[in-house]
Length: 205
Image 1 (cartoon, rainbow, N blue to C red):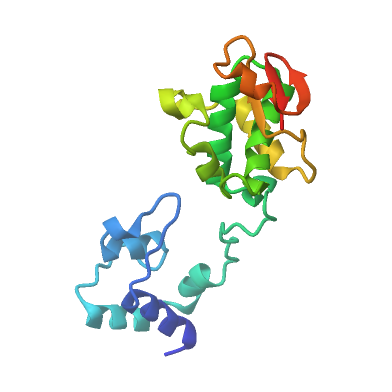
Image 2 (cartoon, rainbow, N blue to C red):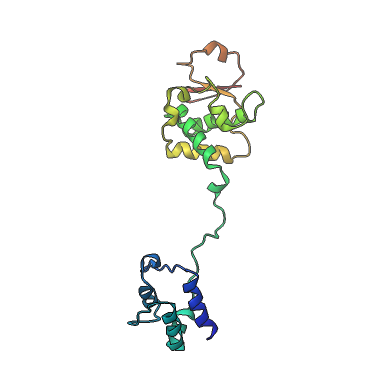
């Protein structure tokens, strides 16, 4: 019994599941599997002894038509890591949602600045040291308290969050932002150092 024939039987005994565009072997009989591989046409094995018998009587070239054909490359991803994979998905989602909730209707520059404030707080010793904890710090972000933070972020807000997470230098050096037309504690904000004004938001530190 040559190596190729032993290999066929070992495939069967090992429970190998063959998958092709037209086969799902786990739902087929042994006959269907052998027919699809081109090993037999009408002969139906009844058990393992019949399989051994079948192996002995099959012509060498009929087996080679199955085993000697080039095997197509298995579709396993070996591509280079995409840029998106270098950004933590949870951080991206959290940052995109707070950007969307706080800067909806603002320019892309305004969205970037809001996202940067969150990251600046993460790096500052007066605030929590994770994006999650900064966003959920009590009484800091109105959207978390009123529930709008949980709305799905738009593609623009996701892109802004991604850009902020990927950049090396801060886009804006601010720890706070507010809308002066609706801010409840305007006097306190006025005690902080002014950084910039973008759209409807004033940024301070």
